[in-house]
Image (cartoon, rainbow, N blue to C red; front, side, top):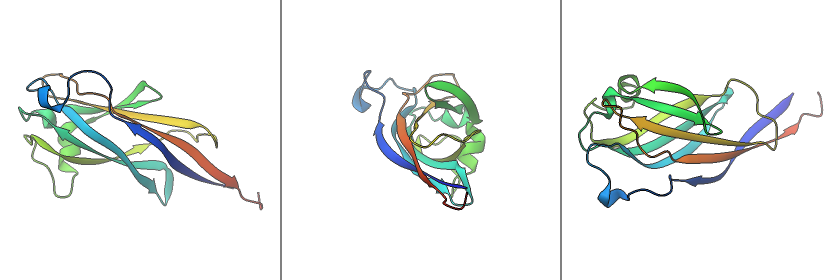
Length: 145
C-alpha cells in the first residue's frame, strides 16, 4: 500500500494580456486559483477554489473547463457549479468564489508534477484567462506492502 500526498509547488495566474483594470467588459476573469486539499477518503479527489469576476453576469450560463498538463479534460456546467456553492451563487453573479473537486482518473507516480488549470467560459462563449496550479506527488511506501 502506498500513502500518496500532493504538495503545492507554486501557482501562477495566466501571464500576459490585460490586467484587472483594463480587462475587456463582459469577458470572465479568474483572479486566483488555489489548491485546498485532498479528500481524506478519496486521495484522487483534489479540492480547489477560484475567485472570478464577470461584469455582465453570464458566467453561470457557461461552464468551467478543466486542463490537466495543459490538455482539456472535462467541463462542468456553470449552473451546476454555481448551485453547488454554500451558499449557492445566483446564475447572474458578477463575482464570487467557486469551490470544486477535480477527480483524477489514474494514480500519478510519486515525484511526478501535476499541472491543473481552469478556464471560465461564459454564456456567450467568451473565455477567461487560464490560471494553473502545479502540484508534486509525494508519498512513501508502506513497509507492509
